[in-house]
Length: 343
Image (tube, rainbow, N blue to C red):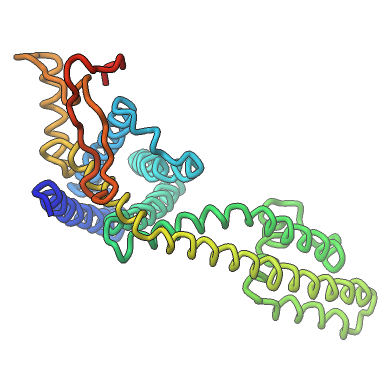
């Protein structure tokens, strides 16, 4: 193991500890200091605002570095649908904090702030899984989950159509003229109740249909009988055909990642090493904010000569056998420089 790799492991451990501290502070605020009207500027809220803002700056810095070092070519644009989730944790946090500080004497706005911040805290917990991406045992498993999520997104439309079809037709047969024309009533009757059929929770639905068929009022018996036939058809379609097809697709995705297990782990290890190599000396938010302030002061008040980090006359060589070492630059003789824009 090289010094850089060992130093990267130490930085990752420190970053993990500070991230856990961030989650603990966030959880502490949500559990004990959300209703504190007399102390709206509690240290936990100030710490969270500074830390999240520093994380936003760090992610913007990473995008700029990837652009200037031409590393965006390595991005998998098929997974670009996953990128809004990264921005969602920041967007929800700022919306929740703004609603919180505007919710004085407004109970409804305060409830909105609590809900938004609670969902945001859930996202921060889930994104803490990135710290195990470089572990050989767990890293490829995260790739499996990401690829399975992409496969699931393709099936959501099919499942939504089947649920909507049964929900509309069944309610038109046995609940005609009983549903209120409101968003809550329509959502509950057409989507919410039929949704649980995905998990084979059909007892309540069958109980209602049997009560109509065996009831004293037999006017709706024919509609209820047809509804039972539709229920049986949709249980076969959704629970047997579609879900088993989805499981088969998941199985193919898992086997595909398992065959390339070594490649995915080496790539994730390289990304981690490169990420920490490019970060400022104080890599952990909110301490990294100090490094950015110093950088801005140097930009506005330059005091010496600035040198390039990457050479214009260089040849990029990829180590195949030791992918964890990443990329290294081999200098060419001055006469063999290729005409290429400066990085």
